[in-house]
Structure formats: structure tokens, C-alpha cells
Image (cartoon, rainbow, N blue to C red):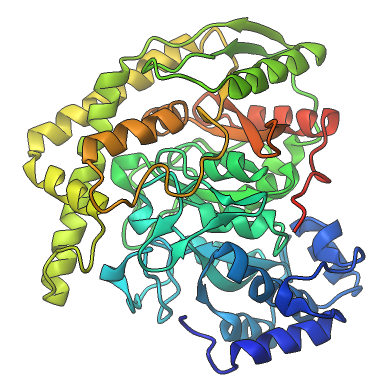
Length: 506
């Protein structure tokens, strides 16, 4: 699939297994405990490279071997760019905080010129852009070695990672369950131990949902913090952002340090931080005022285990000296949901009609899935005034939440309305009704979208597990531009309730 077909799959696995000294890797056998991919985060891997205890080539071979061994079980690889990664090492890697650490991009609107990006869609099969994303340039300047792209639902539209191009992506904690979406492939790869962190994007929860489902740390940055282009510097009218899922908090912070800041043509940018985000992780936060939000704004039911996970996180925060009280911002969930549908659907419709014009291929069930076609149909009915009014609705909500947060430093809630659902529970049935799908998706993820609608940073922290052994994340939302407070709190929580050794048995 994609670039890197110079070797057969069997040859790739065999060469990686030889490099690792592993037996039976094609069956997904366990890697020796001493493997640095098991014992180090991305910053730690780069430190090993600097000390010459391991080479970038060795790390890449190990990551490729794991990807090939585990992908048949979990299906997280959309594009293989193995030769591209090896060529980058041969050319000489830049000296940065992550030099030599392996990296996977998300296969959604994130480009390397000449290499395929297919957006989880048959409509984009074989598409090769002629531009490289600014984010990719920054990731590579930080020293990461890109070796592939991860699976997504079609156009990143759903909270599970299932599509008709690459199939279902499965959760390493239990393959019968979803990884979440739309960054489900990234989360599966990290949870499975292929690499310690990977690129992810978030337009309605797509970093935090899979982080919660897969037991990872996932921070959605403030709107305008991380570059989106070229060619566009804004996604879904400002709802969408880029960042990562990771095992450690410090990796997330250092990745944001390496990628944040305005790009050419930016319409806006998040406030420039006074200090590095990485420096915040080891700083104890001041006594925080925490609003505990346990009820969905839509009134949809929340699984008791998710409620208890948030309550447990609140008790942990109190034990750390923070003040917690139940409170929630005043928001009109129906108005916000309707507005976001207008913004997303009109954007999707424009893109798909442009794609149809460029390719001469008509929109239909042979190239687009039912949910996507419904978005296109809905978007075609919207007007410019609808778009302007939807944007105004979100701005009004942003102001209301900002006023609420004058009295609170963070809002604590469950990340999701339920533990990871079984594959197929939300989407992809050919006859799924659009509005029914929307209701089910909103019930699964009723908390995450508010941060996208208001532009604020939010993080899912892997503090709990369900009674059936599936991860449950809790979410903290901060003030716009204040990722620093979230990283200080996350570092404190990671130290108080470590999760690094909590991993699925593969």
C-alpha cells in the first residue's frame, strides 16, 4: 500500500526480525523486554541516539518490524513510507529534540509531496499531493523519522476508525472494540507499542476520543496553535487542529514546542507561550479551581463507569490540593450541534464536489460511504448566511465559556459517554440514517466537541479502566491559549497516578 514496495512483506518482516533478534515475529510474538521501544518515550529514544546506544536505523527497523507484525491484527497502517524513512536517515537527520525517533503521520490532509494521502476514502485512492505540509517540515526538523501514515475513517468524519478503503481498525486492548476516531490508527499503533507517539488531528474529539479508548495521553491544542497548511491554514472553519497521541506527557509537550507557531498565510495564531511547554510538565501547578461537569449538555446518558472515572479524578485533584466543585458552562447544545453540522457539511460538500470535478468521477456509493454522501447532501442545502450564522453561534458560545472560566482554571469531565464500543456500533451500515448516526455519535462523545467549537485546549488523561479491562479517559479543558496549565496538571497527575506501565497484553 503506497510507497515502500521495493521489498515484499515477508522480506520486510524477516529483515526487521533479524535486526531485533526476535523469533516468530510474523505471528506477533512478544519483543524482548530490553527493547527501547518498550522502555522509552520518544524523547528517551532520541537520548539513546545522542548517546550512540542505538542508531536511527535500528529504531526504524524495530518500528517497521513491529508494524508489520501487529498490523494484521489491529489494522493501523494506511501507507507504508519505509524507503522514505530510510532515505531520510541516509541523507542525515537534523539535530533536534527527537532525532532518530520513528514517527507516523495520520493519513488525512497531511502531505509529503509525491507520496500518497488517501484520507480513508476510495474517492482519494492513489492521490499524490504536490506539496509538503508545514507540520511535516517541522516534525522532520525536530528529527523524527517518518515511515508511514495511519488509518482514519473516511475524511475523518466519525468517532470510530472504520472505512471501506482500509477496513476496521481494532483496539489493542480488545480487538472486538473500537480505537475511537478519527485518529484511531495512530492510537492503535502507539497502544500496540510500535512507537511511543504519533501524529493525530482533532475536529470534534479526534485526538481525545482514541486517546481515551486506547489508554493514551491526548492533548488537543488551542485553535491556531499548530500549522494546518499549505494549502489551507484552517480546517472545518477552525474546528480542526493538529497534534499527537502519546504515552508520556513530556513527549506531547515537547512535540508541541517543536511544531507550534504561525505559518505563512495564517488567518490567526494562538498566543505565543512565555516558556516552553516541556518546562511546564515538571512544574507543580498552583491551586487550581476545577469545575466538575458530569452531565452531558444534550442530556444523553453517561455510562456509570465514565462518571465514576471523572469523580475519581476529582478526588485525586482534591488530594493534590486543588478545589473541585460541580459546575458547567451555560451552553445551548442543540444550537451548537446544528452550527457544527453546517460548518462541517458545507466544507465536506465543497471538497467532494471539487474532487468530482477534478477527477471526472461522479459522487456515488462506489466512491463515498453513506455518511459522507449524507454530509455532502446536507452541505449542498446550506447557504452563505447559514455558514455565517453558524460561525456566530460558535463565537457566542466561546464568549459564554470564557466568561464561565473566569471563575475556573479547568473543566473536568468524562472524555466519552461510554467505554470503547464494539466495532460497528456507530457507523458504516450502508442504510444508516444520517440523523440517527449523529445521535449515536453524539451519545458516545458528548463532551469533546465543545473545545473545538470554542477553540480551547483540552486533554484526555488515561487515569481509569473499565470493569471489562478497557481504558477510560478523563478530560480537562483549559482556557484558550493556556496549554501550560494543562501540561502542569498532566505532569502532576502522571506522577501521582502513573500509567506508563499499563499496557495491553498482545
